[in-house]
Amino acid sequence: MILVNTDYITGKELEMLGLVKGSTIQTRNIGRDISQVFKHMIGGELKEYNEMMNDARALATKRMVEEADMLGADAVVNIRYASAAVMQGAAEVIAYGTAVKFR
Image: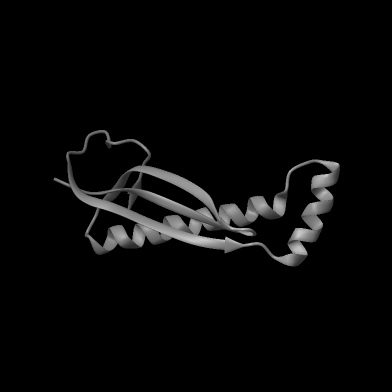
């Protein structure tokens, strides 16, 4: 599966199959929160949260690709990511794009 953030793939003619998306909601861990509060106080990168968001993006992408596979897609173009707070301590990450088939 080819994944790109452009609306084209050089050298390919595309047939649009439709919107595909994948999402996940991640919550913070209380132990992780405590260590990150101290890090926030002294400054620097919040590595635990960064890792959590990277994992969430990877899972959302995997779910998007699975949806594209079900449509028989060869690629997903124009991929975008978004995140939003769902409630205090929980964030949703969504990956979306257009599933396409090569002509």
